[in-house]
Every structure is written in C-alpha cells, then in structure tokens.
Image 1 (cartoon, rainbow, N blue to C red):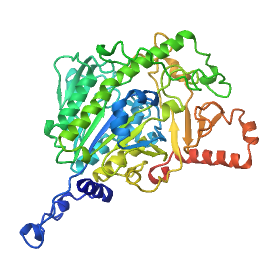
Image 2: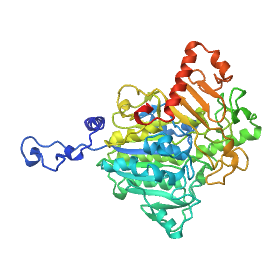
Image 3: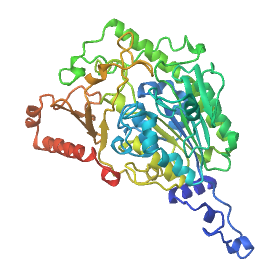
Image 4: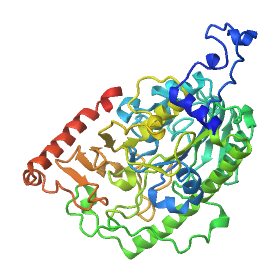
Length: 526
C-alpha cells in the first residue's frame, strides 16, 4: 500500500527531474545526505511502467467476448464510457494517439500516401511524438505490431532495392525495442516478415502473428531486450492487427462461438432511414444472405480477438511475477469502431454513427479505483498527454488533455465538445460479396467518391453532423436516442424552426462549436 501511494504521489506531482529524485542536484552535485551528513537519503521512487494495448477496428460489440480484458483491466481500473475517436480510420486515429492532436493539426488525413499513411506521418509528427517525449524523460520504449498503414514505404514508391532494404530496417526515433511487419500480409497474420530491432527476417513467418507479438510483450516484461519492469520507467506500445479484416484467427478456433450472432440492436437493419442523408438513406433493407454474412463475420471477429485476450491474462500474471503489477498502468482501446448492418450500412467503418466513433477505453494502474466508471467526454487525442503525464514527460502544446487527474479522483474534465470527421478513404474498394470491407491492401476504385464527407461535433449528449458536400445536417439526442434512429434535423430548416427556443439555442451552440473546432489548436480545442 505504501509503495502504491508513493507511485501515486510521483505521478500526480509530475516529477521530471530523475536526478533530484535519486539524491542529485540537476547540476550533478551530491546532496549532504549522500555525503553522510544529516539524515539518510530516501530510497528513489520508481517511475510507473506503461503498457498500451491498441486493437484494430474493435467495436464495443466484441467486449463481452473478451473476459480477461474486462476482468483484469476494466474491472480492476476505470471505464471511460464516453470515449471517441475523431476519425474512424486507422492511420488518422493512430496519428492522433501518438501526437495528441486532431487530424487537421497532425496532417495525417487518410490511410494512404500522399495525404495519409506512414510516409505522411514521417513528414509531420514522427520526430516529436509520444515515443520521443518518453525517451527524453528516460523511459525505455517498445513498439510491437502495426505502426501505420504503408510502413515502411507506400506501394507506389519508386525506390531501388537497396533503398527498400534500408527502409525495412529503419526504426523510428524514440523506440528502443521494435518489432513490426515490413513484408507480406500482416492482416492475414500467417505470412509476414518482421523488422526486429533493425534486423529483417530472412524467411516469412507462418506462425500466427498475434501469438508472436503477445509472446514478445511477455518477454519484454520478463526482462528481454534490456527492459526492467521491476525497476520502473518502461513503456510498451502493443498494436495488434486483430480484429481487422480478414479477421484472422488460429485454426484451433475454427469451430468456436458457432452460435454467436451480431447484436440485434434497434439500429440493426434500421426500419426507416428516410431521416438520414447520403448513402445511408439509399440503403435497401438487408437480405437474408446479408444477415448470414454479418453473423458469420461477427464469429470470425470474436475468434480474432481471443489470442489477444489470453495475452492480457498472461501479461497481468507476468507483471505480478515481476512484482511490477502495482506500478504499471495498462491501457486498452481501439483505433476506431466498426459496424455491420447498423443503419443498413455494409460491413466497415468511416461513418459518423456511434458504432464507429465511440470505442472502449479501459485503464488500470496506481491510484485508480477498481470498478470506476467515467462519462466525461474524452477521446483518442487524450491518450498521448495522459501517458506523458504518467511518465512525467514534457510535451509540446497538444489538442488533448491528460486524463490522469480525473483517474486519481480529481474533478470532471472541462472539455465541452469533441470534434468528429471522416478521413479520406481512397482504398475503400468493394469486396467480392459487395458487403464486407476488403482486406488491406486491396486495389482502389472510385467508390470513395460516393462516400459523403462530413464533420461533426458531440458534447456527450447531442451529436451534430454536417455534410460537406450536401446541404444537410443530422442531429441526435444520444441520451434519449442512443441508437441514432431519429434525426432531429431531418427536415432541415423546417425542423430547426419547429424547435423550442431552447432547442434552437442548443443547435446554434453546437454549430458554433463545430465552426471553432475544425481549425482549433492546443487550448482552443477544449
């Protein structure tokens, strides 16, 4: 208990001068106590460890099938029930997670070059991101798994073989341990080559990737690659490819969860979409074949997260074996959500609906009361400043805020609005059956031009969506209509005029907040 309180005090104060904490002045001079004068010097306080677990396309419907994650992270820590991603798309969300910024500030607005993908991230924030901040604060950092789409270079690059080899061996700044796929199809998780600490595998792996990454995580906690969790000050960023399409899983799980079916919530195959705009309004009701495909896809997605969920249990046990569990924060979330037949939409992401933009966030660690639930409005731009705050690392000005004071019993967050939008999706091709999202990296077509761009804002209760290529808005009262069945602005100006003065004022406030947030920066984003 005393050790836990000591860690809490360290994290809460944000102490950054490790030398002073260990009995040394910043200029290197010894303290009197270290020369044997006065009282003995107190023992150095251990800096907290951090393990950040990032899933790929995981939505809340899968959480009931991850018992270790819920039992050992959520139930032993905090659950943020009002947590959003700005862009429901892999690369923009990962850039927000590592930078603490909205997409208009970090510059990664799609999954592929030139507006998105790894090469875009490399141009913008890679040299001043979370890993760099933590490294400057003395943390030892490991990145395992999916970094960014198109890492280590985009498919259209015209590079010599020698240049490609060097890029496959490249490890971005701030990372002391590195293991990320550089060849093959990592999404299928059974044919890939890894860059491990700057060395690329000679042969392709055939073992299940998430099993390999999970074991690597455990090895690091157990002292591999120079890590010392017992000492403190260690950070692991574990980015699983599960449950991204093609929803890969080990053969041993083939017959599991045979009776599971996708939740039949009120928005599933929505009866009336006439209040919606864009392609959602044009969708036909799902066919029997569509529903069967959705249910089978859901079973694949459940199977795809089982190895990860087992790794969570092994991770907690390994931390306990190292006497490091009470000094370690474990954070679990997803880069974006997913929908399957909700509002009649085909399987995929990218929409403004809750299935896609509201994702789980669970955090356990020192000073966090087990079983805590927060409905504060939070988002993926808050992850980097929260981790930096835990580590006592300095950051540049960012759009997000630290959740640590709230986690330690402080007042609610002061944020009133959170920005939403749709990223560019040039590789959003159509799959063979026309229903499922195709696996990366499938060919491109012109279908993305039919997907209506939007910006939006939520205050936790209301969500306002503004189409950028259509003269329409959508407004949902999430308290009374959590499945977004009733667009309160379905008749545009007539709907607005029919509202009470208080209702019109609420809409005006949301519109003004959206106008402000689309080009906000730093403190103006709160």
